[in-house]
Image 1 (cartoon, rainbow, N blue to C red):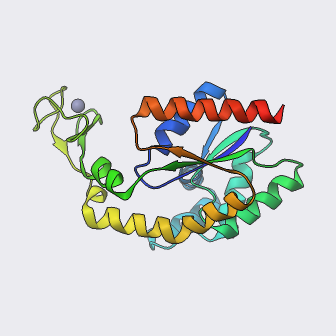
Image 2 (image 1 turned 90 degrees about the vertical axis):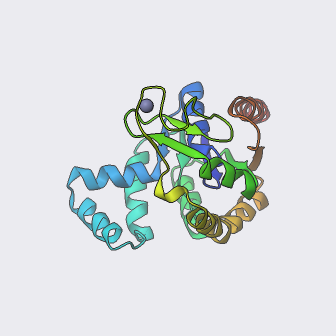
Length: 216
Ligand code: ZN
């Protein structure tokens, strides 16, 4: 199966993608990890990517495509996270896959309201020592000042109101047209991501099972 994951920041697509990858035994390809790995490899391409990133610029599509092509390699089944980000990239992905006689099976869209995104992200606290995360609304630490390991808790700089709103705006500008693109092609599978992790997980699996059934 070839699956693309889409969702606002804070929709839980990373967590669910990780689970799905284990459950279906399909590798998960995370675009930002691929780029990071390329930079760390010290390759020429990596140096180029690092240049764009350090200037705060977007890595050009052509470079992203090259990295992704290598990341996919000879895989026939994969879960893609963080790509495509816009319609142009989606068109590229379609033609790339069809050149290999493949197509996407499903685009899972983790649907959640902006208000829930705010609660999930603004409420997040991270332990300085062990990296454990809490949420002051859903999963508060026993002592609001420290983790169960005794480490100090802090809020990530990106988890503030203004930055979250900006990321939500970027999402709706870039990704809304992408949803439409996949909806028209009958690939979009919306999943209600406003409930707890377990419920979302169950809904996702039962939908995927019915898809597998349909295609067989
Ligand atoms: Zn801790």
